[in-house]
Amino acid sequence: MIVIVDLVLMLIDLTFSILNAIVQTFLRPRLKCIDGELCLITGAGGALGRLFAMEFAKEGAHLVLWDCNAAANEQTAKVARELGAKVYTYTVDLSRRQSIYETAERVRVEVGDVTILVNNAGVVAGRRLLECPDELLERTLLVNCHALFWMTKAFLPQMKAKNHGHIVTIASALGLFSTACVEDYCASKFGAVGFHESLTHELQAECLDGIKTTLVCPYIVDTGMFAGCEIRKELRSLIPPLDPLYTVQQSMNAILAEQQMICIPRLMYIPFLARALLPWEANVATYRFMGGDKCMLPFIKNVELKDANGHVKSS
Image (cartoon, rainbow, N blue to C red; front, side, top):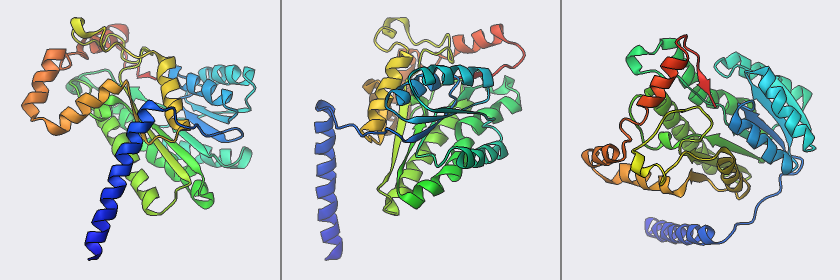
């Protein structure tokens, strides 16, 4: 009898969730106020990180900016301060767990408890698997995936103590479906998606409804990180690289609406569903038609021509 009651309740919740999602698609959701919240952004010196800093500054949040490039990080801080935000900068190597923990402790002592964590930093090796140095492969996994564990372990306890916070993971469409020749990046982003979803389930199981999570999965963003990547030319106008500002603004809308997941553009939901529902051969045929199976080859060639010394491109 209990199972039947639970089944009925589950079906009611399922129906309500679907209807609510449909309504939210057409109606602008109410956005929460984050004025005075302490927001930490990783990879703040990069294109997306800087835009996120600007958007959070406009909303009145205080900023803690992390990046391995001190000069770029300070430039972001300068822009954010011009918008009236309180800004604190830290130089951090996210590939080093101890660097994360030590800097997190400094933030707690010098600034306070972080209430919004935006895991934005990302790198890619830009090499074919068999030609890529092991240290570059490891760095991609460390920065894009492992750092999420260390960042969460560093800042989640304070959020749990107050049942208040928001964890944002900037993943990628390549964390939902894959393509050739970027095994390191796909593996790291699949890991990021899996980590984020499992963490969300854990928080909900513990009834910590005051801690929100948002997973962002954009298509290729025109930051230069994947310069040269291109699908079939007849389809490029249908799915062009995303404008960075548009990507961040769409992400911010999802964060402020406490939306749990967003794919940018919405068209990215189609290959995500196709990967789960269609046979492997059908997905391969689709990829080949779109040029997705070889879209990374020009990007890799650009990296090889531009920097033969193993420079890692980051977002």
